Image: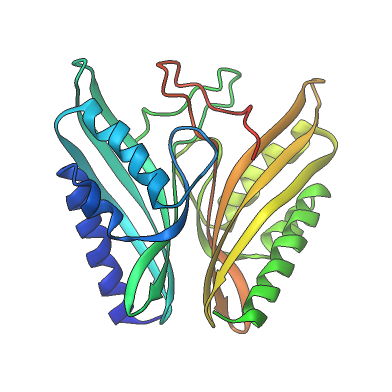
Length: 144
Length: 144
C-alpha cells in the first residue's frame, strides 16, 4: 500500500468525474487502457475496449439536457506500486432530454494498472442491485 | 504483475467456488477479510464485514434444493505482490426449494490484499445489468 499511489488514483477518479459532468468523452477515455473490460449498468454483460466505451458514451451523454450530475461518495482505494482497485457510491443525476429526472446511486468498482508511468483503468464495474421479490426490478431508489 | 500471485488467486477463486457449490459457509468466509465491503446481487447497496456476509449466505444457501451450480468463466487476474483484482462471469444455477429453476450469468469483480502472507478478499462486486427500456428489469437472461 502506497500513499503516493492512492493520491494519484484519487486525482484520476476526480478528473474522470469532472469529465463525466462536462460530457467530455475524450476526457473520460483518457483515463482508460485501450483494452479495458467493463461491466456497465446497461446490457450487454460486458464491453471490451475504449472504442466500445466511446460508442456507449456517445449514446448516453446526449440523453441528458445540460450537464450530468456525478457525485462520488465513500471512495475507498487499495493500491500497490502498480496495481490498484477502488470502490465508491456514485450518484448520477440530471434532467433527460425527454424531461424525466434521473437520480440514482450506483455502486462502482474500478481496477487500475500503472502503465508507462501513468495509472489507467483496465476494468470497471458499475451496477445497482435488484429486488429478489420476484419482480427482478433494478433497485434504483437506494441511498448509501 | 507476478505469476505466483496470479496462481495463488486462481486457486483461491477455485476453492471459493467449491465452497459455494457445497453450501459451505465457513469455507466461503475463510477467503474473506473481516472488514470486507461487498456489493451484492440483492439490496442493500452494500454489506460490510464477514458477519453480514454470513447472514446473507445463511439466508441464500437454503433457498436451493441440493447443491448450488457455480461455474466461473473468463477469469482475468491482475496481480501485484500484495494487491490484486480479478473479474469473471459466474453462472449460478440450480433448483430452488419452491421448485423454480435458477440459471443466471453474473458479472463478478473481486479485490484482494495479501495479509499476513495469505490472500484475502477485501472487496467483491456481483451484478447483472438492467434494461434501459423503461422496465428497469434486471437482465438475468444474458450469456457471455
